[in-house]
Structures are given as structure tokens and as C-alpha cells.
Amino acid sequence: MNNDYLTTSDHNYKSELLELSQARGSGIPRYQTTKEEGPDHDRTFTVQVMLGAEIFGSGVGKNKKEAEQAAAEEAVERLKKTLEDSSFEI
Image 1 (cartoon, rainbow, N blue to C red):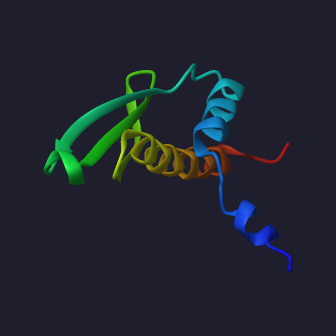
Image 2: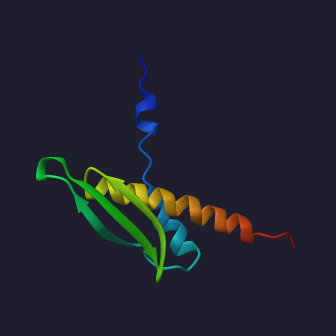
Image 3: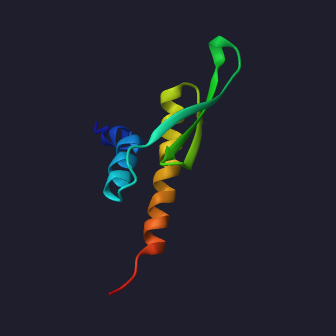
């Protein structure tokens, strides 16, 4: 039995965002927890990721790591779109 599909869904958006942001000279992404809700046994975290002074994404998760990954995923998609929109032919 082959379970390769289980490992391919574990994408590390934080690493990808770090690589993209450094490649475009935006520095290191900063993550900030903006909200914690719910009882201790069932918390929900909201995190923003910033590049420079600009908020590039936000995410929600059951722990900070999950929320940071969600924020990084949004930021990666936004950054890729920005790079595609600014590309031009020579």
C-alpha cells in the first residue's frame, strides 16, 4: 500500500514565504498574534504576517503554529500574484 499522498499535503508556507520575501528584498516576515479566543481547552488564534510595515496575510488556527501557516499561505499567494502582475516582457 502506497501512502505518498499523505506527505505531499504538508506544505510549509512559512519557509516558502521566507524564501520569496528574501528573494524580493522584503526582509524577514514577522508574525503577530492579534487575537486569542475561547476557553483554554479550545482556543482559536488569529495571526498576521507582515513584510516591512505592510500586513501581507492573516490566518486563524487552533494553535499559533497553525494560524501562522494559514497567514503565510495567504501571504505567499498574495506575493506570487504581486510578482506576476509586475512581470513584464523585455
